[in-house]
Image (cartoon, rainbow, N blue to C red; front, side, top):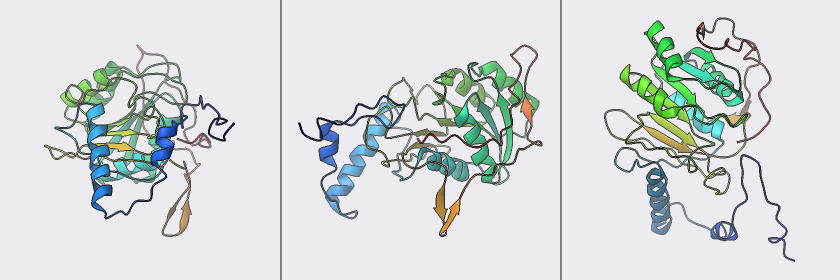
Length: 269
């Protein structure tokens, strides 16, 4: 029996088992300036945008790194220095998005529910109506740590009607659950190559579009928290943030008040 035949079947949220065809496609060396490589890259970019019906509205920009790296890129690029991000949390990756936003020096508010409670459009509407300074909303479509699916179309509609921008972490939904960019307005959508599209890890793409605003789709995979910047290892802060506004409503379950400065999860995306 060959080593390929003995490969384990990965049943984790990602990375997933890749087919022999996918493995074989990686055996060839490519020159980054070769016309053939550029053609492959263009085809991959086009096919990724086609998955969510966004060929006419979005552009895919390949990147390399982890899902966290791509989320950081979206926040750091799309949110201006004086921007204010409302992050919706009901799991570990919502907390990670909030922490990255703060690491990027952006103003942060959070709306947090229990891990088994969806964030609704009504929740987002109340938070946005209560604070006109909020410019962006960060949403985890399918929370990898729990599997809970948040109502993306409903929330996107609320955000768009109030003239705010939406950043969507679609790591665990892109390629598996229907997302139609012609019906769901967003400014950034971030996904992972090693999850639902069952590609190799560390293959990635980012998608800005040249319509009224820049819009991104990011597909990324690789190491999680630590990284290199100017030769130095960067790690997340571990202190709590008592000054970060938290939103709740008497008509909803109590907002989870767990410290957001807890040690980040070790699972890699």
